[in-house]
Length: 378
Image (cartoon, rainbow, N blue to C red):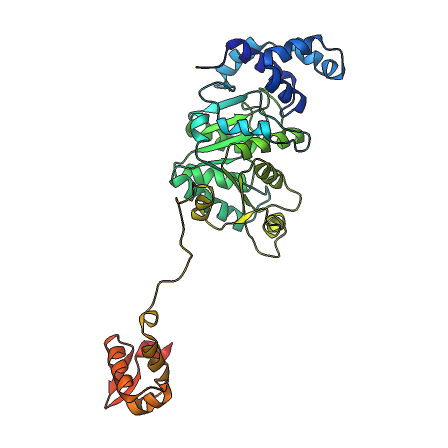
């Protein structure tokens, strides 16, 4: 069942008159419902009422929804089947930079269901002025997530966001672009082709009203949606002052997993990430498998520690390794000489040499032993 139509119209009106993440509005709507709050606003004569009076007079929710439909947009609110339930966690999360609360509604453009994309999702965010290294890592991580059906959530900005979306699309995986402007707008303008493609195969989301311009306060409000829609946030390159760190702060406040990809220690674009890791506010990750292990239920996607495959030497017994180390590097030697160098009895040494010969590690010539060619040149 969808939410009541009167509630939807009231939320459309409030969305068009208020700013995304306005604490007074989100808290009041959560407590009283949108229709009650809208009625009260029209009667108020205080600062908030005066601030919103002009916008309220111009608001026409029916026409707004009709215009949205022509633009391929839909307005999703709590109670709709498509509403992503993880966003409700914002109700118990404190404010950040005077923004917060569950959004009144979301303008959505795209082929995918927003609720479906949020069931298994990871946010990948980072610097707009990303390095080649950062874009490469963000792309590898996002591609690995998308291959197993995990939604990649990001903000469609230059740099890391762009790399994350493109990698998910290249692997035909789900991706969500959360905008700070209206969902009908393209920002940045250079990403028109990217955003159009995301709308065709993924989904674009915005809390800002139709036609709304991107502003600093809307970016700050937008970041909480990116963090809330995902089970974890991966930060790839972020300076000490960075919007990506704001997203990480939201993720931490929501109890989500915060992860950071380290960069070169001399890299300023990675300084903020290093600070997160150093302060133990972020889990160090380097690849998609590590991200999946961090966000998946316990016991799934469990990784073994990285190690090289065992070589021939690793499969030797301690005595065999002792004998092999005693075989001269540059010349051959008799078994008795090798036994003395190894500190083992002649019989044990001879048995070990026979085994090493079978493995191709040593060669016998005229009752003298030398290393095989590959070992000799190693």
